[in-house]
Image (cartoon, rainbow, N blue to C red; front, side, top):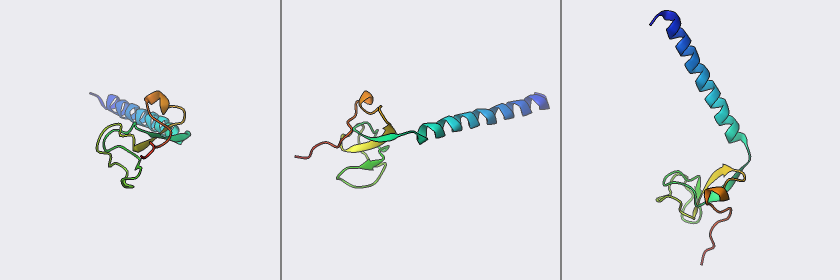
Length: 87
């Protein structure tokens, strides 16, 4: 590879990272809602009742744990907007 190709490749890589970062930041800045029952094991944002530590769900889609998701997407993902009722 010549020097121009290396520099061009490096610049394109930086541009791609910048675009991806901007898209990610925009997605995170939108309205969010708590969605119960969609978090994967170890990827919950919080716990309901058992403890308050994020990232501690032991199984996928536990209805007691929630994750922040884009507003309006929770029920489409199969989740619930409220915590399950305790008996």
